[in-house]
Image (cartoon, rainbow, N blue to C red):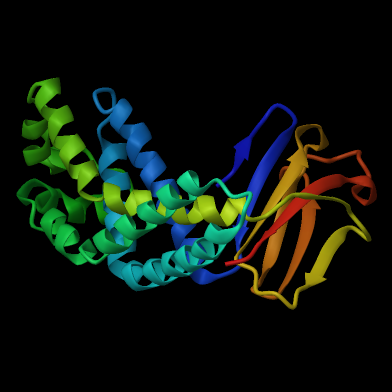
Amino acid sequence: MASTDNDNILYEYPLQERMRTYLRLEHGFEQLKASQLCFEEQAEPFFNALFAVTELLERFDIRTELSKDLDLDKQRLQKWEAHPDVDREALRNTIQEIEQCLNQLQDIPKYLRQLKDDALLASIRQRFSQPGMSGLFELPQLQLWLSQSAEDKAKQCEEWRKTLAFVELAITLKLTLLREQSVFVPMQLQNGFLQESSDQLLAMLRIKVPRSANIYPVISGHRQRFTVRFMPLPGETNETSLQDIEFEIARCSP
């Protein structure tokens, strides 16, 4: 995910494969919500996002990996309950949210089956998975369905989206806990790139780059070693010396 504020652009890069999947799912759910809002103008992005999310959930064992990660988060939070300065109510609420997610994640196969068995979705999914543009002349059943009232279509889209809402909640909770446990540290680029090794396992990097610098990070690495280089947009030159770039980095541990 990349986001911005007034002064910086925030880039995130996963250093573990399951974190890559979590970020892809987060992005997919964001696309699903956004496309639902403009469904009347353009319906295809909603179905593309819905099928992309379900495909990711079918390909990867999210239930096991995410349950394991959330259970570790729960154990860590429980250790804080005895701390005198902790907000116990907020802590208990978060632990309860985790427990709720852990219970619901066991039902992923059931709800995926529910979407897979939906007659309309099953009839159009293959066409949406094929490369290139498609037209309604190839999907007359979808054209007929789209001729319904806006209210009926909105209700059905909400039902489809809510089928996997518990997975979205679990992904959001996991990534929020991951992001909040790390702090940003200011750094200055050395020799044109940053290279680090870590004794601690890392799950994700978060990098804030000044908007005024007009460069983006190219990141590679794995759980205990990573490199960061900065580049201008393709086709553009950057007058700024890359030796002088200041940025902030947060190293997120699982």
